[in-house]
Length: 96
Image (cartoon, rainbow, N blue to C red; front, side):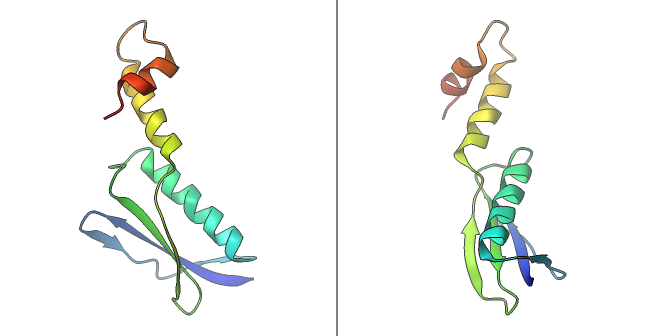
């Protein structure tokens, strides 16, 4: 198992992962990075969140943003405030 680091960026904010997490391979680390981005992206400023994934020697492997599906999910939940709006329709009517 190898150590990977997951730094977070929101606009001007930067949080450095000093501890890291062990994963079996790069694929597992990248998947974990996507899960972090999606989970935080559900609750945070969706457009500015980025997760940078680094190898144990701090070599940048990827910069990951939340999945587009999470943005649709957010818009759908916001759209449900309008009584009678179906969930799938709310996702499209709330798009920017």
